[in-house]
Length: 296
Image (cartoon, rainbow, N blue to C red):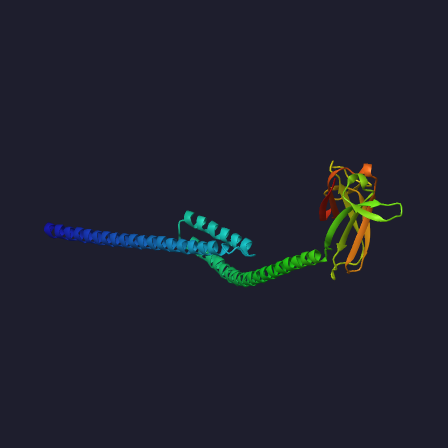
């Protein structure tokens, strides 16, 4: 009887131990499964976070490239780019759990949608700018060609004006000077002696010129004796770049035809020195003819 009770107790202990062992094994299995599940979830969340960060970096790179175009949307692009940068910073600090990832994903979707709209507008503006640049460059080329053409015309007109101006200049020819002895009868006799000379006769001709302006022409006559004295009126005329000391002036009525001009400078023998004399004809400040003669 006692032996049967012992056997029953032993069986009960074995059953309890078996149950405890089964429970332990079940608990260990559950813990292992839960651990693997948690590890899988953590790995998945980490992988999702890394993937999300890559997508955000790509989004920022898209904005960086768009900003290089420097269009009128640059301010809007820069503002959206800053939002992406801030989201990247927040995501890096987060644990990457499902709830936060869902929140960040929603923000990303909104930013990505905005990015597509802005990039489309930016590309359109870029193409418009390229067209405008091409048109501007073409205009610059045309304007450059027109400017060169205009410059050529200006040069041609200037050359033509100079040619006309040059052609319209009156040509003074055959300048000659002779000392004159005036007899009591009024008869004039040429002389080459200073002591006998009463006058100096200065003559020249103006050539015909069809393109010159007709009208009165005034010339300044300068006679310089052998002692470098200016004879005659000894008046002074100031021009822009010179001062002219002259003997007398002569005014000619010119009508585009050849004209002979003669003028006299009065004096007595004592007024004329022996030696070489120089005669210069000026049109304003321009020397247009010169000659010399000698008295003995």
